[in-house]
Image (tube, rainbow, N blue to C red):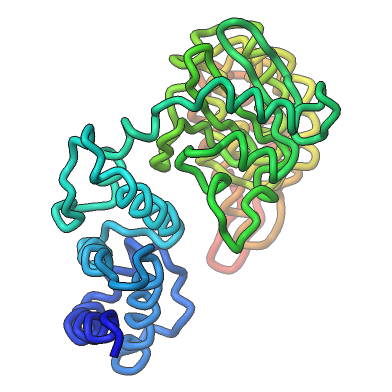
Length: 378
């Protein structure tokens, strides 16, 4: 009998009952959509087993499963998310490579780490060892358009920064080597397809690398921990760099208005507020958003646009009337949208009084209409 079988049998016997008991709490952290019906008994056991087996497979040491117990303990603490499990696997691989190095300052015992985040933080300095300039030159020779290839394009280059537009999966994997990102890893899912519309790499003169995809609401460094970096601090308000990034950011804002992604919209508008040059040349997009955006996306956009004077002023009194007409209807969702838009207008009443005028004009043209149990009277 091979060594891992009794080990896995022990872990299964020990942990599956714990997973069954706390499966709801584990799933909440795991961020799983509940594909199985709420139930006790057999259904809970199936859900627990599904998570257990995913964690077993996530251990890069499939011979002896030395890391599996730690993964299981992390899950019981609610510290593992399914969407980032492959990051944990890659961190464990990296840990196994660097833990025996003389300059490794963390614990060599994986069980001492209380969460994946703690392990990632310990590994961060070793990931930030910059790639040699000779390696980047090799990538350029193999993938840049200026070298006769179609894998990457230089959007901007100076002594301080370079911005690459990554155009192929192969080029992306090469340029992101040793970065903590899905695009650098071998996976069954083709992650490049999710990012290919606006994937960029920002490089500085010191060898640092950042991946930027406004369409995916991500701007991350080599040690991606799932949180966006402070982009204004990295770029330092350099107008020429921001000019390159601006059209990509604007396209993402329009897209988020189309599909209604409020958190992403808010983060992009905050970037525009932090770096005013990013606000320029956007007002011509506003009529398109008002006409064709998803109703909730339009409401989210209006709410955020009210934070930027030029955008706020570009939305006229009659634009408000037009938006309210689009939202009008007899369904519950229409009433909720009207309530949402009314709340947004009220929120900005001091700085956008013309929006209030638009709401008053629209109200004058409406009859009070009773719907069973509900009233349309914004």
